[in-house]
Every structure is written in structure tokens, then in C-alpha cells.
Length: 226
Image 1 (cartoon, rainbow, N blue to C red):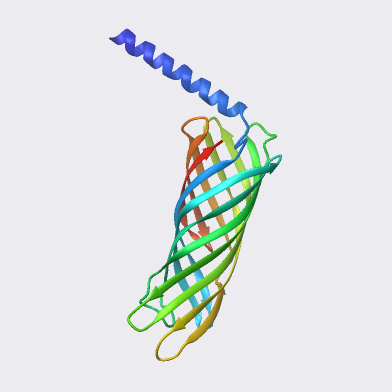
Image 2 (cartoon, helix red, strand yellow):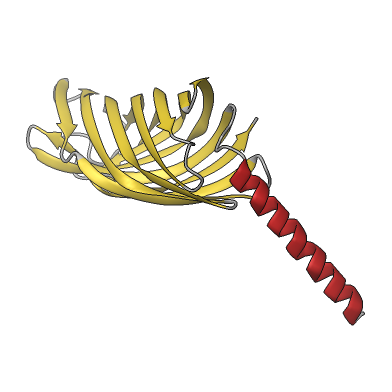
């Protein structure tokens, strides 16, 4: 029994080492990818009467396709939730809706371990909420640019860096006492991010990413390369 366990342990170590060597030898995301993204974050919406904290939930899918060496285009979309603290009119409403966006990502693959990435996204958000007498719709467009190093080590990917966001949106409220239309923008723009992912096999990975600053939240990503 002990010999069998030793042999099994030895084979497991050899297989793990072989897998790690294979990951180091293969380029990161060599082809297209599909993603399942589950995340929540909070950020300030700057209304005419001041900042109001917005709690955003995004649950969707994304697709990435290479168009040149180290350069991918992305499409993402899905289900959206929103709650705005102290909304000037619809303060008791929770919103649900959808989002859809485009993105582009560059990530160098020349270095064996330490590389650099830049990503830009532009996303449309549309949510609705209602009460007994009031119907509200909030639409906003968010541009997000991030950049930082990526460390590749065996099946691990560790990344960190800085980002900048721009938000432009509007809220339309219909119902008594009067119809109202208000615009808002980002209450703050800059922050940092840190995350890691682990390849469970040669094409599938699980990642966890956290943001601080203007956006404070966490995102869990299930990814499959093809």
C-alpha cells in the first residue's frame, strides 16, 4: 500500500511538473476565448445634488477573438442590477436590466514570465425600476482603460495595475408629482486593480479580480480558450 502511494505521488508530481512546463511553453490565450463573468462593484454617480453611491451587479458572458499578434477584440453583455443610495427621486427602487459592450486588449507574450497588458472597454448599461406610482429608467455609458504587468508562472497568471473610468448617464422618472430628467457622471475616475487566475487544464481557468478606488468590487471569471 505504501509503495502504491509513493508511486502515485511520484506520478502526480511528474504530471504536475509536465503541465507547468507546458503552460510556460505555450502563449497566453493563443486563440479565442469565452468567459462567464460574475461581479459586483460600487462607484459614485455624480448627480446635480451631489454624489450618490451606486451598487452595480453584472452577470454575463464575454467572447474574445485575436485579430493580430497579442491583440484581441472582445464583446461582452448580460444581466445587470443597480441600487443607488439616496437616489434624489427613486430612492426606494432597485433596478434590473442589461449591459452590452465592446473591448480591445493587448498583452505581450515575448517574455517568458513577465509581460504587459492594456485593455479598453466601452459599455452601455440600461436598467428599469418601478413602484406603485413611479417608473424610472437609468442609462449610462462607461469607458474603462486599464494597464499593468502580468506575471505568468506555470498555470498561474497574476496581474495588477491602474485604471481610469469615465461615466456619462441619465435618469428619467415618470409619475407624480412631475416627470423628471437628470444627468450624472462619474464621481471619481481612477483606481487600481489586482487579480490572479489559475489554469485547471490547458484551456480552462478560474480567475478572481479586485478593484479599488473609483470602482470597489470583485469579479469572478471562468474562462475557456479555444
